[in-house]
Image (cartoon, rainbow, N blue to C red):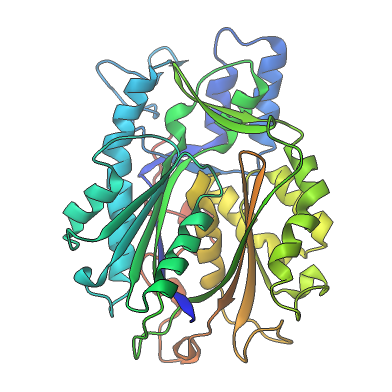
Length: 422
């Protein structure tokens, strides 16, 4: 049975973080050692990020919170709220992103009625509350209260793939199933000033965002699917358990992101891809760059550099991942879905195909997380014949479509950004 992704939409909070301004604030914090100050400048400048988004509105110089909890613009000090304070904000602000992304995914799939949704899978590793985001979505959108609900919590940056894999399994078990998958992360809730290299790196990379998708095996005449979900695989590298982790501390969640992670990925990426590509004989042994699209989770610039070098991918094949990192930062589980959406919004490719059916294109995708865990997936991008119709507006004109754009175009609020952390 063939299972399809029929819509994929994204959402970000309105507050914009300008990377250079955030760097200056973090570098000016009292208590930083000389080495810590240098690490802040190096990590922020080398991250290949221009803009990020945050749900913490007071992280702007224009904020005038009566009792600031994260940032005091009057003194320029970054504050240290408790984990409870941070999680309370997660409960309110993440709910908004979960609902916004889910609504956009439903709106983009006109053949689906609200009551058609049979399963709901929510994903997040940046906070907890109960009744949780799955409950909030059902109530806010008016889904069937009997919808089967599942929440994948605290898995990390790779969690979108277990969610999509579960959705695919539900659809294979029930041909009438329609699954709504929603990832939302508020990583910026957990930033803090520190001399610790892992904490500094996390503050330079992580951001907030959400993505939602509709997955089903049902056919909808006149509504072409976006992707065919082909295969998923999971691999644990033999080393790396101590190099990437996500722990709960008294002042927020604590990231462990050792500088050896890119080297671990470099050493083991070939082996991690083998189980996935061996599912199709036409792809096993094929030069990696012959697979047209690569949706790589941009855990950081150095990780993308290592993957590109090891797999001998072209600069063009890394554009979706690098542009997502540049415009949005690392939004944990939602990020790879932003990359996939970027690929879906590209015009149809020309030239020799790579093992797909005539007119379709293959996408090899991967994400990395604690453990060190490598999740991989193989998709088929389905070419919509309507996109070739000159009378049909270009995808760039459709609302809600993420494009490979300049930072000031990445979000409506960037036209006149609220300068953050400055």
